[in-house]
Image (cartoon, rainbow, N blue to C red):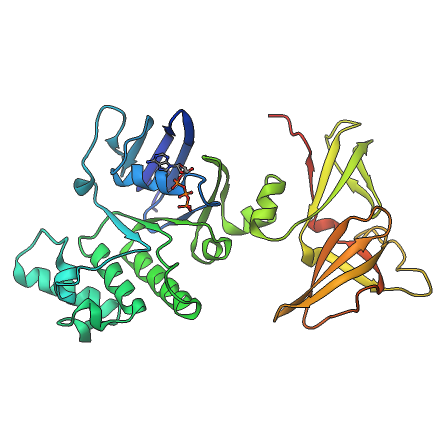
Length: 367
Ligand SMILES: Nc1ncnc2c1ncn2[C@@H]1O[C@H](COP(=O)(O)OP(=O)(O)OP(=O)(O)O)[C@@H](O)[C@H]1O
């Protein structure tokens, strides 16, 4: 049986650091990616994702930290394998094929090994794989955006890179095309056993593509794990808000309980007097109609109901978004409801919160 603990990660970066003008834009970033694994570096614009990718590609030097491929050092602050010898493929949003070269020559551009027949066979194999063999003698201007993207993928894969670095590679494509190409690309990369580091600022893209998500903010990786875990066990309020709209209730803790208008929430280990944010997504707010000035009775799963007035309701396609103003303090909470639910502004409703879907974070967590 294979002992995976003995396997080297295909890519391992340790404590990468890069500053511009005294400001750390990549701050102590460490990551491991196994062969065939897709890791998404996910974060808002400017958080340092592309800089991390550029250091791995070798087009930019880190101030400190190391990069290993298959257990071999390829870069630290003194030793540096040049970009073209790193066996790393690149795919960026502006994938620019060479316009004066045929599709075959574009795909074959980075193929340095093998004789002419072997190179031609590899080109045909890849064009077959991306379903574009019929365009082998065509030119980029004869292809659609999606087809050009697939040629770019074939070109990046041709020399059998150990690692593929992708920086928002699908963002130039329209939505429907993007889903298909994303799935197709993922399939091919998995078949080739390539380790993939994909940079994106779109949570949906990361959840769709990734085996593992590394959530990045202000130059640091704040959380890392399978998409399900990152989404369902966020480390802080900003991590919840990065994936979806988030409702927040501020409360104070006494006796390991946070006291709110929706009843008490468990806050284990949080000292008395600490302010906490109770954070939950709009789909976890429950709505009940007013029954003669009363809402539903308290339950152990949903706590106490609180009275609210509808401020506005919007139809969003698969769901409706309803915004409420809370009676007790005038704060706003948002609920998403499947299907069409468009109550009139001013309507009185009673809200409860799914306890098991709430996250409780101290407002100033100890570091
Ligand atoms: N060569 C440079 N000189 C100075 N500052 C830079 C340089 N390259 C990047 N930066 C800054 O470093 C920060 C991180 O940039 P980076 O491109 O890595 O972010 P990103 O997360 O990839 O953002 P985006 O999603 O918008 O591409 C930004 O504030 C950027 O302005």
